[in-house]
Figure 1 (tube, helix red, strand yellow):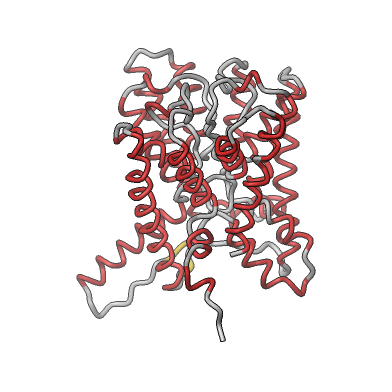
Figure 2: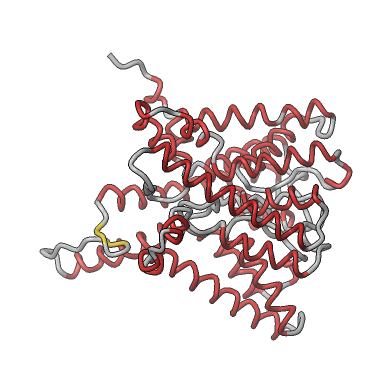
Length: 413
């Protein structure tokens, strides 16, 4: 309840600077922009952000960096040990993924470790951007977008105007911020085997490498560049989409159908749990496939006992059931939201792409909401629905669903 209500309140307040500055006169557009920032979605309702003042652009980019690690996680870090139980529940409500490990016995210490990793990676990314000649102001704003995997920038063409070096830095760090933050302290402790044995990390590396190879080949066959350019463009877009960052270096709407279809699937799958990325998360994909395999095994062998394992450890029925419930609700929200925004009269694929881009916190989608377009053509009602989808995607459904469940507010005797 606190997580759901807290994020809605923060988004409502975050819209005020846009309205009060006059950059966005409409409050619903400002709210849409604020939600897109805090949830690290990176969508925008206006066409020309280069006309904005530097202060409002900085605010727009900063809130996505804050939202990447969690706007309420800082509260947890300040809590005393007496509030550890509540703090852990709050942290779980904000943290993406089906499981939330602890780096230390106390919740506050665990959050400190996560903050250290987040700030350290952000600082290294900023330093490399500055080393590549990017102006300080633009480097900070770009770093905010990469670290929070939000994708907001200061130019209408995102990263297309920057050098290949700067684009490569963003490619690498988008992938790094898509890794579970719990693994980084293990690396510092030289627990290499624990990291290398992580099944979600290995799947993440395999999906990224395989997707880059397939899209590079598709671009070469279509004659859209040489080997170097195709590999560079494919690497950037795969990193951007799978981590839900949403940055771009060109109009991928003209890419071959195979490349666009693969990007659409990566938008759904997402990166690792416990990162700043969104989407289903690869750990959930593993659990869903293994629970399906276990279910089929029980059909063939009714008396057998088949548990779902992850990283060599059996998962409880509660974790598996919660993952299955999440997937059902995820599909249900997509269908309902697509029907609701259909009142605007847009094509089915545009509505579906817009909803998928928002609930997966990716930002740009396809067609009317592609990298060279924006969400400004949607009605006020549709923008409100899409803003709710962004919050649902960032908080992974349950906090928002619980907040609006009538039984939550009934007085208990």
